[in-house]
Image 1: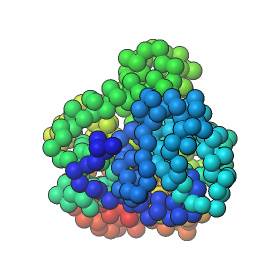
Image 2: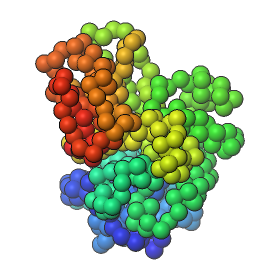
Image 3: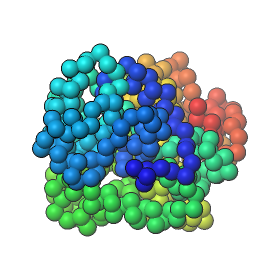
Image 4: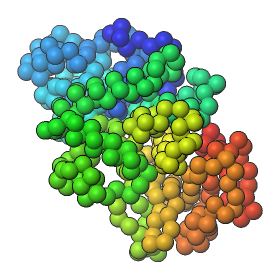
Length: 393
């Protein structure tokens, strides 16, 4: 357990929601990528709970093969860490929960394999569990803990909490180790991957395409795998919190819109590590700077939407001639955002925003902005405005 104790605690914006859930639901499941801070968050918020890690093979084996005995040894309230390693446990959790159904906060689970967890929960714990996703640190969380960290540094260092809890950690070594552990543990258990080397090449190919339309045939051809394998591996990356898809927004007025999602790496630090961008100078010189910026802005927007209780409301807009990076749809009221890797956007950068405003109908647009590296927000003459990423509230 000592290995989970960080040098300083970085508060997470998800904490109030977790505290509410534990007071009202018998099971709370915290999912998210490896090292996103799931275990640390539980241990920080619920120090009175017992703790068991299924990362330990002996515990995982008993939880899987003798779940009844396992739960006798570890009665609630208990944190069960890494439940993806014991899928057989879920049916027995249901029996344990139903024996005392009105008691909230019995089992707090963590897992880094979202879809496997969802399947097990829907089969065994439907109506009993609240599922909450934890991503890596947002810029807001980073700056609250370390106000001296600049935006570009945060982009390159990424959002893994350990990198800010202990700033002496070398980020390059961290990501090398992270990739090795991820491939060895999560990928081996999630997917029947014949070659981890091919899978790592596939992940790097995804990094090169972050902030672009997903083209599965292209990806498969580049790595030398079949389209069905590419499909399976994309699901694996999504299930383990490494990539995020952004679906297109469309209405009856825009029948020519594309159907493919856009592909993003979930964390800009891992993206920079995979692209070999290791300094602010390297980022500014990189042809991928715009894609890294868009990936980073998307992560901040996802955090903003989650805080507002609007997960699943983000899209992109594209027809045959134009694209707007992000559309937030709150009950038909749209906010439009373009991510631009520039410090001084002008009205000329709002051509696509203006086009979509006209097509969608001005009355339905509540906000239109260029999210840029500007020092401050300022209005543009056509009714749009420039926003620093720090002001995406």
